[in-house]
Every structure is written in structure tokens, then in C-alpha cells.
Length: 633
Ligand SMILES: Cc1ncc(C[n+]2csc(CCOP(=O)(O)OP(=O)(O)O)c2C)c(N)n1
Ligand SMILES: CC(=O)[C@@H](O)[C@H](O)COP(=O)(O)O
Ligand SMILES: [Mg+2]
Image 1 (cartoon, helix red, strand yellow):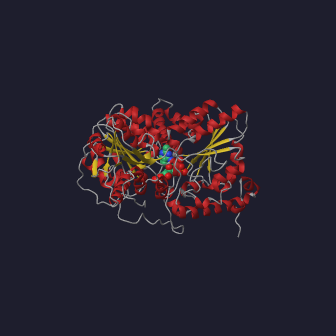
Image 2 (tube, protein in one colour):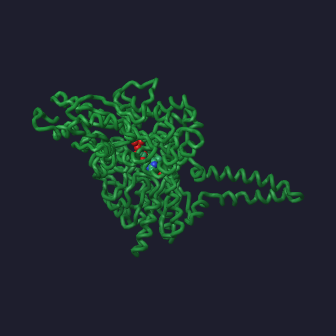
Image 3 (tube, helix red, strand yellow):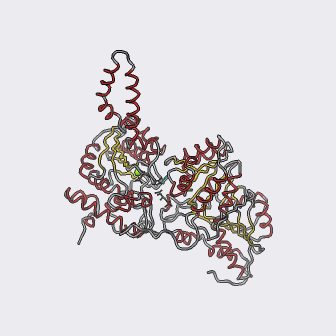
């Protein structure tokens, strides 16, 4: 039977439907989203939570002339399905397939590209201001979640919007969840917990105070009691947004399409900034996601009938995140100065376990990477040893804080950068391709990356002994399967490791690429070429003695890293060689100077030549003609 959804080729078709048919569209959208995410993995709960909102938005607004800007964009699956992309939806998050986030290149309906949080209000305000300069009259709507509203950037946008007074609709999608339950005073305020707490305290204090007034005390108390109800209704989340110069409406039920449509029609007419507060349930309509929102925030393939995932990858190797998590707990047991900080990623970074082991020494600061770093600097000033666990891509947000607040003052803050290099299906917004480049030139900062899980343990232990800033980065996925250490040794800072000797050429690698280098060296030695392999381990300080001593004997150097070639590890080796006055051919393997798409990590690494095969190929290109003729595998 043909579904209603399949008849919707664009929002114009949605507008033609009867009101009563919209519930069926909502159900069909949910079915399609669950079926596709169950196969491909993706951000399920957030998308299910805004199905009704998405229908209402495309009913009321004239998209794409009117702009909808989705914050983070992980909730935009229904939007994609209603805007002419049903045929491609099966390729969601696949190699060369549809992006999991709004992307301007993908569709004219995706008004703003996104993946990182809290940009929607600023972008929408820019569009509204641009519209007015150009004399247009299209409408602009930002949709932001309560989690994303915890970032300073969202408030920078609100602050400016209240000043510019442009015609702009901001929809606050409040489900009381970030990835984990949302945190912070703002979250309490929105959920009215603060309203009632504050109110009760206010009431008690007032009663006490008034009760003491001689003669008329009791009357005043009674008067105050009569004012109670109006006072209560006065203390709403609206006060906050009205303070920013917005007209506030809500909260309304974000799953009631009729109410949403009617309210949106009204707020769309208001000639200034408006905030519409809607209440939704993350995972709405799919029970496993409603019951366990963190699991279904971003989930791998699962059985749609039960919600069961396969419980992790086959094999004995442990995920780097878990190694980080367990090792940090072990280190913190020995050193009570260690505290853990996350910016709303307790699950993803593995700090959840730390928070259970050391609740007093753990901080979830909300989606506030900049604050996380400066907060850590403050803790370090107090003699503590903060470990800030942030995905490489999100650390981009806190660049100045790393330099100005931590490194300039040489404070002992450790940065644990998970998801370095290529992360896979989240694609270009989330690859951690740039961290070596944006960190390696910062004075005082030590920068290291492990080739396997045991090395991660050693680097972590080393970081815990250093009295200054230290960053280490490790990839998404599993280690190589080594048994973990109970006794972890401290490394010499800046000391690399010669893993394989040879004089026919030199490969210097970091991170996972060291393992590829070893495979390549083995392959080449079977062909009669004997290459030395160095695991530089520290990108800063580089092990100049080791590297230059090997460079002296080598006819050429190949560097390998899973980081942007621009200003990355290979560049640092080039600088070292040049500064030493040496000249020899240097080939650099790494991520090229463009944004990399989505796919599995394996697909992307093959596409970009981040592999032993590519190292072999480059070596053979550099090797003099009279070496044995060999086949490139
Ligand atoms: C700068 C940045 N930090 C962290 C993240 C990771 N992240 C993605 S969604 C999310 C929670 C968003 O919560 P909310 O805005 O309330 O949306 P919901 O998932 O509840 O719909 C987080 C922390 C991100 N995308 N960008
Ligand atoms: C949308 C977002 O930013 C996060 O949900 C991110 O996708 C998580 O990535 P991991 O799945 O690697 O934890
Ligand atoms: Mg939320």
C-alpha cells in the first residue's frame, strides 16, 4: 500500500494534506527513521522527538525560501524525508551517501551546515540581518535543544538578537536531555525546578520576615499568601528570554501538531525576536529509545523489534575510550589531585565510569568546551590535576582557552582528545583531522599520541607526572588487542622509539599509522628493502636526536599520520630536517587539504591512502630503479 509519506515529494505536498492525515505522516516518518537507523546507525532519539515539530514547521513556513536552521542537526532526519530526499534516505551516513546532518550542498532546504552545537541562533540572526539589508522578507527559524542552549555561543546569539531586534523565531526544543540528562542551572530553570525551589525559599523567607512585623505581621503574611499564585506564574522560564529582549511563548506540547501549527502561525507574524518553548520527549514513539535516551542518542545498527544492539565489536581488543576510562580511574586512585571534566560527553568520553567512582572529582559542564578548559585552568591553580576529556573536533571550540588560559600560564592541565583522525559516519563536521596541527605550535604544551592501547596507558601515566600542560589524542575504535598493564611505566618526555632498523629508507609515523608502517616495512623487507621505522610518539617535543640520527643514514624519509598534512606531524619532521641543514626526499602521508566525507573508518582510510599499501607504494617510488622489481599489493 502506498504510504502518505511516499506521496510527499516536497513540503508543498505536505501542505495539501488534511489536518487529520498528519498523524499518519508522523507515524510513517517514525517508522522510516527507525528502520533506516536500525540498519545504518545514527542519531535516533533526537530525530524521533521532533517529528511533529518538523511537520508543523514545513506546514507553516514556506521553505526553502524561509530558512530553518537546525542546531547540531542530528535531529533533522524527518526534515530530510519531507524535503524530497526519501529516495536517498537508505544511504544515510554511508560512504558517498546522505549526510547525517543538514548540509547546504545536499539540499536547498538545508539552510545551514551543522554538526557542532549551539550555532543556530547566531546563523539565523545573520540570515535575518542579511535579509533586511537585502530588502527581502523571508522568515528565519532556529531550532535549538535545551542541551545546546547550555553553550555560551547560544547566549552570545540571544544577546545580540535582543539588541538587533530582527524578525526571528527561535524554537527551544526542551526534552530535558543533552546526550545524558541535561545539566546546569539553566536546565533546572527551564524545567521549573528552580522556579518552585526558589519560590518555596522566597515564600519561607518572606513569611518569616513579615511574621516579625509588630502588630500587622500576620496580616502581611496572609496578604503574601494571596499573592502566591500570581507570583508563581510570574516566575517562568519566559523571564529569562524576555530579559534578552525576546517575546516568549510556551511552554507548549511539542507533540501536538495542531497546537504547534497554530502557535507557529502566530509567532511567525511577530515583528521581532520570538522564543517559542516546546516540550518534547527524546525518542518519542519508539519505546526502547524513550526508555534509554543516552543509548539511542547516537546508536549503531540494532534490531528494531527489540532495540538490541550487538553489544560491541567482535574480537578481544578493547576500545581506546575504555582504556582511557579505566586507566584514568586507576591513576586517580593513586593521585587524589586528578579530577575529570567533560563537556556533556560523559558517555562518549568514558568519563561516566569515573563520575561513578569519584563523584566529587567529576564535572559535566554542559556543552561548554571553552568553559571546560578555563575551568580546568582554575582547578589547576588550586593544585589539582584536571583531565579535560573532549573529542578532538570539539576541542576546536576551545583553542584560545588552551593557549591563553592553560599553556601561557604553564598550568598542569591534561587534554585527553578522543576521536582523533577519521571518525567515520559522522563525517566532515566530526573528523579529528586537525588537532596535531592546531596544538603542536603552542609553547609549553606536550603533545603525544599512542600506537596502541598500552602506549596510551604509558602516555597517560606520563602526563600525570608532568607539571605543565599535556595533550594526548587517540582514535575512535579499538586498540590492537594487547593485554593492558597493571604496572604502568612513565615514559621519557620527548623520547620516540626505533621499532625496526634498516638503512634503505626511514619511515617515521605516529598513532595508528605506526602499525601500518610496521606492516609496510615487513612487506618491503620481504622484497629485499630494509627500512627503519620510528614511532615518534611525541609530536612535541620531537625526538630530534633519534630522528636526525636515522635521517643521516637514510636515502629518503616517509612520514605517516592520520592528521591534516597541513602543519601536521610530517610538517614538523620537515622543519626539523631543514633546520638541521639536511636535504633528502621526504614524502608525507596524511589527510589531504580538503574536508573528508563520511563512511566507515576503513573506507575512508583506503580512500585517502592511510595504509601500509600506500606506504609501500611511496617507498617504491622513492627507491632507485636498480632495486628488485616488485609488485605493489
Ligand atoms: C560543540 C559540540 N559539543 C558537543 C557536541 C556533542 N553533542 C551532540 S548532540 C549533543 C546533545 C544536544 O542536546 P540537545 O541540544 O538538547 O538536543 P537533543 O539531543 O536533546 O535533541 C551533544 C553534547 C556537539 N555536537 N557539538
Ligand atoms: C551529534 C554529535 O555530535 C554526537 O552525538 C556525536 O555524533 C557522537 O559521536 P560518537 O558516536 O563518536 O560518540
Ligand atoms: Mg535536549
